Length: 443
Ligand code: UDX
Image 1 (cartoon, protein in one colour):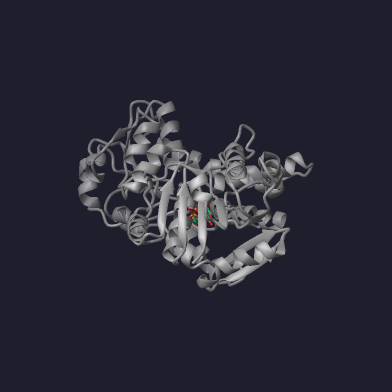
Image 2 (image 1 turned 90 degrees about the vertical axis):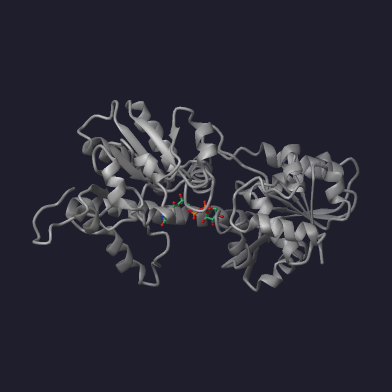
């Protein structure tokens, strides 16, 4: 049993704190938002993450998990503090570190015994050293501490599973003893542990996310070429993915990546490269292709409803940036909605869990109770998020409710042949449809 504090109760902080508590440690999570802490103390999770509420309740009842707004209280017996606060994008794509600075200052002012400060937030290379400087400068009396980088690699929607079953744990520090202690904290996970220096650990996080984003933009570029040449990107990806050097994951063509990490991290890495005099051409292409996929969606809807979107009714299936989360940050659905609205379209959306946030962020977006209400009177539907519940809709009913049977499948969840047989005017990303006799192609 270890005493652990966690600063920040977003996706990363809450899942980290709750999982460490579930492993038998005593964890206190801190947040500056009283509203969030009150919710958590009443057993409610401020975010939607499968399994998280149950795990919070179990560990609160077990006396292992606590929530507070006070750093003093959280640090009273803590040996470790994980900094898991947000690092949003600044104006030029650089990471905005104001919350990391605030957390570091609060730690410095409240610590009264030796402490290991672990950065889990995705922070620019060199931030660990900067955090160490801030703590040193802000301490009223010198107290020993070490800074360690231990980046998170969990995905939203499967954060608990990913935390408990990591492919690897990366631990970086100038202080070998502190790095060993943080590695030991992760031993019950039985994962490979990579111990390295502070800056290398910070870079591993950026390079990993940028590589995965590159895979997505790569397959999206291939998808658009497939459309022109009459090949099927789904089968291309499968054919490539069986090669173990390539691997089949993150080769799903679609409307591109969104969320709180990939868009921000690729931009931040490109920004770091620029500032230090190098030319991040590949990263720039990754960002451009990702943006182009949003344009691909609008182009195809416009084209299929007769060349003009003005006054057309478009239904958006899925508003979260991916399934199993209510997170709408950098969601392709919302970017596409804006672009459609800018051309005069009347857009309605439906999502199993993300409607509240989406409605708040775009008050002109109408909301439907279910996919059938969404289809009623629509000139076109677009699938933006591949929620399971969309995969087996009653498509005959959907079609009968629409003004025009136009469906753009931005996540390739339907079979093009079946969709044509049902009478839809259907387009998917990187997939063409050929008549059984080999003639004709809708694209
Ligand atoms: C990502 C990383 O996977 C994780 O390691 C890191 O810690 C945080 O960022 P997350 O943002 O939760 O996790 O989602 P992820 O499942 O990786 O998907 C990111 C985006 O890429 C989503 O918008 C998803 O729809 C898109 N995506 C993913 C594709 O378009 N195609 C794919 O093949 C895979």
